Length: 184
Image (cartoon, rainbow, N blue to C red; front, side, top):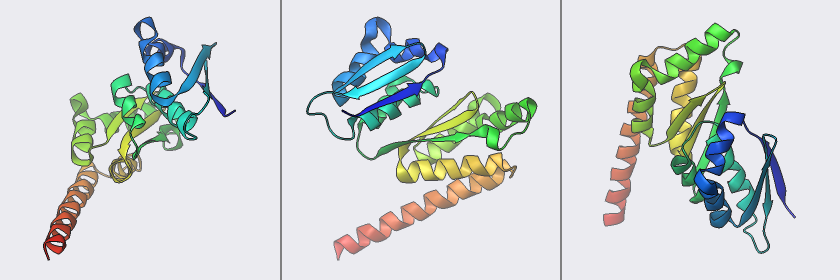
């Protein structure tokens, strides 16, 4: 029987459980798994006849909530093709002050940078603790992660924005070419 264990920040446990256990129930029902939470550790085990990937998907949903996503955004991971990616910001920041500065660069004034990256890529972004996390389809997450890594490497915001704009233009161009080919 497949099972996984995840350590979760204490302040996020209530969100994983939800009011009257609704969030935990939703994960269990959607993925056919059992979830047990004790002492800050979440144990996920498969039920009989569960999808072989159910425990893995449930682990990602729990991790996403633990990393600051709302349950609604984390539930996107129930869908095929949606992935979770997490970057450890402390790999780019040596001190507590530089960690705060890096988080600030990703979020931007009044959340504008994070919102812009989300809008340009379609991926969701959460900056929580020492991590920045992404939920979306592979290409969405790839582009959002690349833009955030540019910021973490100290590149100007304009460089990250240019990358995103160029990526969007290339995708639109590729879509037009595919439509044109389909019509032939």
